[in-house]
Structure formats: structure tokens, C-alpha cells
Image (cartoon, rainbow, N blue to C red; front, side, top):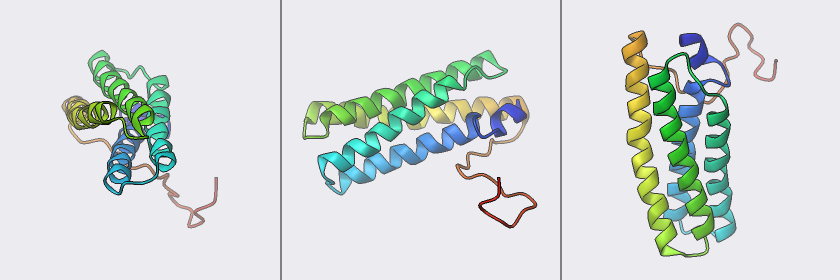
Length: 138
């Protein structure tokens, strides 16, 4: 379980990326960015969610279901935001509700992981350079 969660394609980084993408979407909307800029962050939320779904299943069926629910919600939030970026208040409100729900869905998945392993997952979105000081090293 820990190995799956810690790989670059695994759940920890995906959880962290969805959190970052969701906050970026919130910020772009709060800053009243142009529709094109809003669409960009919305598309990232959807694309990253779909990538994360592609990395399922996990070694635990319940965690797989929890993450799938969160990533499906994130994808829907990104799609609704993208379609509503020119000012469709109904779609933007639905996206906001989905992003709000996303926080709880991700928390459920993290709690499940903690129950299984006894520790929280790393949700960092950056790769460790481990014993190499060169940040550009493979």
C-alpha cells in the first residue's frame, strides 16, 4: 500500500495535485481572471483527475472507491468550470459545490489510507532528489 501511494503515479501525489488544482481554480475565479485563464485551470483539474483515475486501482478496494469518487468529482468540477468560464453562474456554482465536496472526499481517502497504514500519506507534488543535489537529475 505504501509503495503504491508513494510512487510518482500513485495516490499521494494525485491527492496533492487535486488539492492544488482545486485551490488554483478557486483563486482564478476569485481574481476574476479572463475566461481563457479560468478555462486553463479548470482543464488542469479535469485532466489531472482523469490521469489519477487511470492509476487506480489501489491494493485496497475501499480506498480505490474513495479515490475514484474524489477524482470523478474533481473531473466534474473542472468540466463545469470550463463550460461556465464565460460567466454561466449555474455551472460555476455547481463547480464550486463539487470542489467543496472534493475536500471531504479526499479527506475520506486519506483517512482510509491512515487506517490501513497507521500514518498519513505524503501528498507532495514534487519529486524528491533523494541523495542527489541536482534538481534536474533523473
